[in-house]
Length: 176
Ligand SMILES: Cc1cc2nc3c(=O)[nH]c(=O)nc-3n(C[C@H](O)[C@H](O)[C@H](O)COP(=O)(O)O)c2cc1C
Image (tube, rainbow, N blue to C red; front, side, top):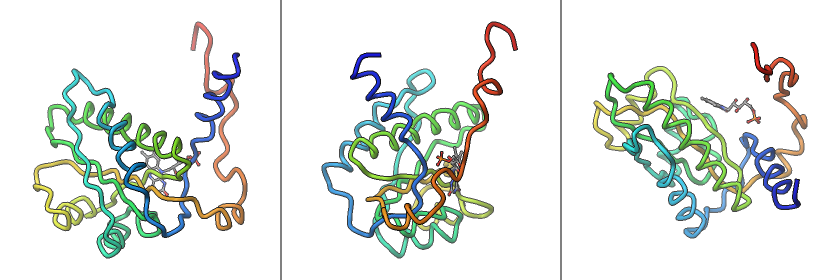
């Protein structure tokens, strides 16, 4: 591997969930980059079904915590992903949402920011729609918390809280 590709691989490997954030705001430049990367995320048939509500208001973020987005309270920004809610395209909407979620996280990481995927639980999607003025027919599930990492809190936790299965249980060569 060239130095550049090994750097990029290291960068990709570094993407882990961050749940402890410092309260300072995310700069407008970083936020603009994150949203721009998200806007260029690929989607099935290039339908570009996703929209994002950028939630900075602390009270609204605390309400999102109550709806299941557990890390949206500490993070200065919560990115709420909205898709059309077309039952015939449910799988594709979820797939597109997943791609977008990780691209948002990678762009945040490129700015040295932490991020984490969280999901609204139970009645959470309905509550979030009402809170944020999102039409009821839309699909809302995924919230990306973004902010500066709280290093002290992160270091105080076990280093690899979510280990991975061995490569042999993951990759199968030529035949399952
Ligand atoms: C679809 C999906 C939903 C998730 N929902 C939550 C969540 O609600 N709250 C949370 O703290 N983490 C959530 N996560 C983060 C996972 O717990 C995390 O990716 C996994 O434990 C691996 O940890 P790592 O990212 O640090 O490697 C979610 C991840 C995915 C992909």
